[in-house]
Image (cartoon, rainbow, N blue to C red; front, top):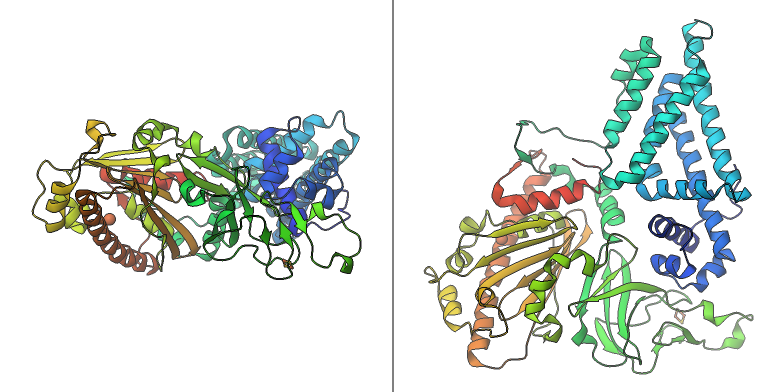
Length: 586
Ligand code: FES
Ligand SMILES: [Fe+2]
């Protein structure tokens, strides 16, 4: 195995990880430095800076993946100790672990393997990995067979080739099925094969605890029932880290509305999952997003929640300046440095997308664009003319000691409305549209009652709400809630809307970000309707906070394993399935 000449940490590792994601997404032939850099949130120049060339980065990526594979197998073998059967089982578990064989890494292997014929360096790394793996498995098989004492039967090479073939086959399954691949079934098949070739050890194979994430079986599993996720994941540190890594770093996050960035140099800053960034409008009118991290010594380049830097950005630590497009503009006291290339010290870009006037960012490439994922809702949203709206209040930021999943689950079900929200139930009809869409979005929608039930706010809201002429008839007295999983939601009323974003701060801790937008409209009845809508929803928010606090306590008490879901919680079930498809939990 070729040893990495340089240890991959920090930016090198970021670029390698981004390369893995970019190869999985684009393949090798259409892969450009720009695609990798965007995925990493770096400039294309940083590839040359850290690796010398894109080719060298590709090679370093293959080496990194290969060395990770070898290290993981070695660690599994070390844990297994001297027992060759446990060694074989450990190899199966390690090969099928998400760490070694997530869909992206598997794609990287196959892509490089396919190129190996033409490339000696790729061939040597892939070949060494295969050869070493084969030797290890064969040696273990031989020891199992020798320990039995029947010389030469079964044949160690044949058994080992069979096992490697099955594992390869499973990897192809991962390549095609991605996150929905059933790793437990794959493990069972490998173990069944080992039982069939070493039948005298079958009892031991069955008794050996599979290395799998803790799964708490439903205490009362009944066919046809839908079960919730288990309670432990709402307050578990490791699971939170996994969520951050697998769900949130590549999840689209809403920052603001384009109207908040109307002028050249206007910026809005944000911090999500420990990543500090900002969106700015450059002098050509383009919106750009960058990490809010100076390339000198990492100080924040812009301060506060929002502001304007009309000409350029100045870091307030040592005075380095940057153009609006992220290029380094000047370095204070340049004579104090050895000669260096300033172009390599710009701001690192973040992927940005504007959808219906809303500005989204994400730190890593992931599933489709916002527009692709929100496609089922595009027509409905178009009626509201969101891109023409302006903010109607300040950004609302509120930290709660409640897990983000608990808040989402409360948000996406109406089963609790009659008990939990008397005001809302007085205003709205009890029938709901409830739907989850394949690309991880959801829609809940309900109409206002012809005549509200008794409630001060509901009755007055229904009376004051002006007819919104630009909306189709059916949407003029309807409230709709749209969600982009995992954590961005829109509350859409006829007269305005808000976004509602649940940013995890830790296991059981969440920051809620929300802001309202609408058309500038000073009519008395519009002001009254918006006031009453706020009043109704402030109460709903307060009621939900009490409910979800209590649920959080229950989930953390150890007295709850998992529950069951009704048809009215179908969107909640869809959200949980979305999580199941991405994280090791059932
Ligand atoms: S950290 Fe920004 S100029 Fe030094
Ligand atoms: Fe609620």
